[in-house]
Length: 382
Figure 1: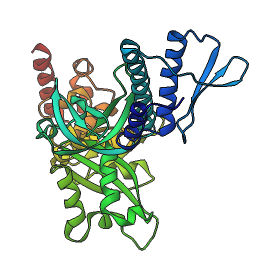
Figure 2: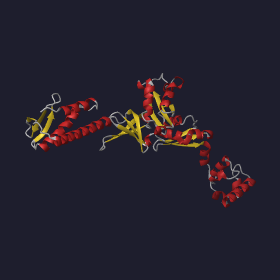
Figure 3: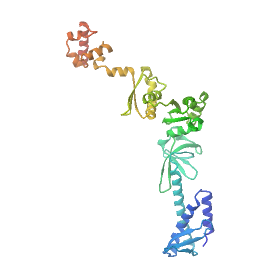
Figure 4: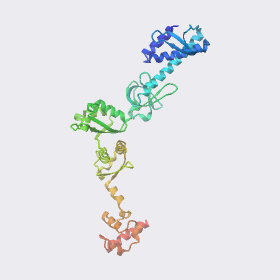
């Protein structure tokens, strides 16, 4: 028996227009026809049904492995409809399976889709033969209000097998999107002369990219920025104006953390490699710059380096090292240190010390000692 014209037409359409593999469709038709033969013609001894991909001849294989010609199926209207439904169901399952396998292998790759509609905040896009979904958490503020039909790039972060077909989950906030833009815009990165070591991003706000050079003659930062900033401006335009900072990669974590906090000037970086913790001291007038608006600069520094970054001003750091009595009127930093050396660090310590003993401390005379004790008593009473 030859495959009828209708099924041949379906086979050619799915292969040509839907991109389905010919053997995949044939296998689906085989499964559907086998079910019909077993159910309608009571051929329980038949274990396999095959269709020759070249001639579309249908043949059966019985339980002994013997090849048999497929008998013509006396299909009435109801039986024909049932057979067609069964075959189309198998084809749909095959198509879903092929799409799942195809896109599962694309996890981590970047695709471009056309905006279709929004659904409970999530953005549904057309990827050609299938739809993709950007959850609201994977969209920047600007991308939550796109026009229908406009193009949007995203990275496939997950492919899930669901009853209605594979679900393609996309992200427009992933740092790898920034990396891909640099690959497109900077030939030296594609050629391996400049390497992106790390990317940190707060989508819609700012991102930092750490780069290094594999050629001593090439400045990696200048190369990525381009002449008069042409390359970095092109990248920022693709990111809807998101600020992009390019910094030089350092193997030393302290140097890298200091570089990531630019444009703030850093006075000192203390590192705890075991705990992945860093304490950064900056001049008082650089504290706001180092932290950044909404704390974004510190957040990016932590993402980029993998360290928790605790930024303090120098005056804050000094205050933390001084005893509590340093807040009393008339107590200078120098006097507070001398009191601490004498074992006087709290109000109770001070109040239990005689004026005579206090006067022995360098920088205090009898009058100064009395005034200090009076201030301590007033502070304690308050």
